[in-house]
Image (cartoon, rainbow, N blue to C red; front, side, top):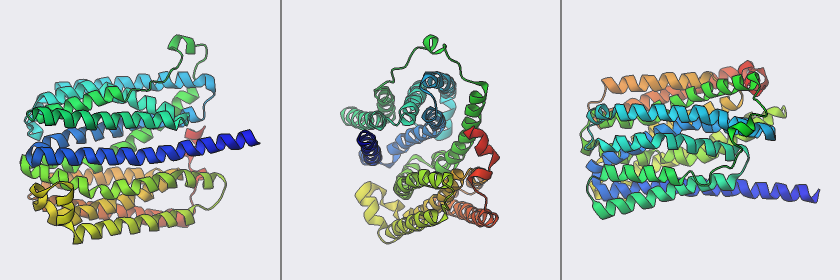
Length: 428
């Protein structure tokens, strides 16, 4: 009993370390954007922000493979783990190679569409895509094995190397800054491959084989997760990409800085959402009503995002000057509106993740539909940065309202985890 308790304490400390590490990494990534914004100014920062946005797009796609490997590794027998790693890594690498080749081929079109100063920034990004997907598979392995120390190390090495190398390159050369930022990103992906999992080679692992049912379950889960991540890509990043296309570099840089500040709402609430999910699943498996816990977290997150929106409303100039500097203050009047749009999206996501923990996937479809509606609306209504923000407020308010109505509908029908056939198939 003493040995079991000591192991449990070690795991608890490891998980707590990962939470602290995640806060540290998020703060470092935020600092990375702030430093680049101050060093480059609005016009040059627009290209750097575009690269960072592309990196976020890749992270959502790669997260599909990370979550899939983590989920199935956690429940696998020891002899199945190498097979799972090789099976999912093969699909992830091919996906990364194909996306990388497409970026290389479409680099001239990207330069024209997004009005960037450099073509090479896309070439360098394309070369790094397969590394990003391989890195995500490694993270999925560590996450599934609950090796939070090594998992934390991959995030820290990526963040620290990108921050240090990018800032040093920009400070030393000061020219072709978008290329320098792209070099920093490419090098950081190499650093993030350390530590690399030590697993048997594929010919050694073939003494066993994955059951066809397991492969089918993996493909189903990958498909559902990919669809959800696609909806997140559309809602989270389409506005920055469209602003870079429709507006001049200076205005696009101002918008990127405002988006970074406004999304503080999402990043702050994200940690609470990540704590909520496993607790809801655990309660449902124990046949315990998870609704009180959800309402408690929903109230806390609502209060948190409301306070941030109020801060952006009453102190916009102070926030912009403190984070980005005097050159960006012209965007300050729009800050509270963008924060409001992000707050509505954050609250809608709380409902989505709660539904997902109950095995309900209709909210994912609603998110995707509203994401497409947002893109379509911005294509037609983009006469000013203010109009771009107001369109997002309307779309996110509709998304939030639809999730609330769906919540009451499912609550009245008392639909839970065990009644979802899709969830049962994935679990099996």
